[in-house]
Length: 305
Image (cartoon, rainbow, N blue to C red; front, side):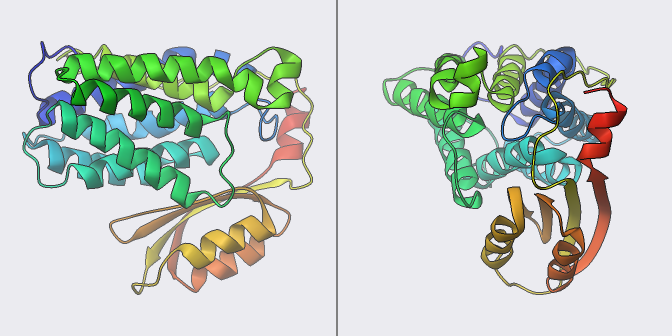
């Protein structure tokens, strides 16, 4: 973030997110093209672009000088707009960051680093079986480098730069952590997408960019998964029950499970052969909205993959 070492206020945080959205929208096709894990459905870049793009569009009209309030609002929009496993994970990361800086008017270097660390913790805790060599590895190493830099006296810009350096190092390591990536000589798509977003945030300006999202997924891999229905929806909670039970259920009924919670809503994502059971489970928690069930096998055939 080009702030000359100053503390980050709400407007700067807003522009950083818009810049991150712009950056992933430039690269979504190349990220889609390397999407082979956990399933080769060729949409990781698209999902991240739509997730960040939706949030950026909402932020266009948002004005609040408080970093904590801006982060809280953005976390809610990211959750609502989250697409796919990668989008939900990013919303978890930023949701944890928002919790960490709650109540702060401005963010200093240590608050920034601790926010990234909290985002990492939230993402790992929400995934039933965290896999290294993914976005999780990137945010973990990014947070570690940021905390180390801040504790040594680095300013905000230097701390975020250290986080990006850590993220890039983690990205390189992904090809050695997952056999499917090593075989193809590529890095993880979600990890690459997160690096693009962080680079965009680090290079943020004070301009109010207009976000235009274009989606043209390109993927040459054949679809290969036992679970063919990508199931996503939002639950508006009717009580204070924990999401732990539904997270466990998602892991039992399919793959790529994720459940993220913010301000009384839960975003659900899972690949399964029984979307009706996922919907039934969701109804135990509250009202459902924005239901999307896609047959990934048919999508793959239609696109010629």
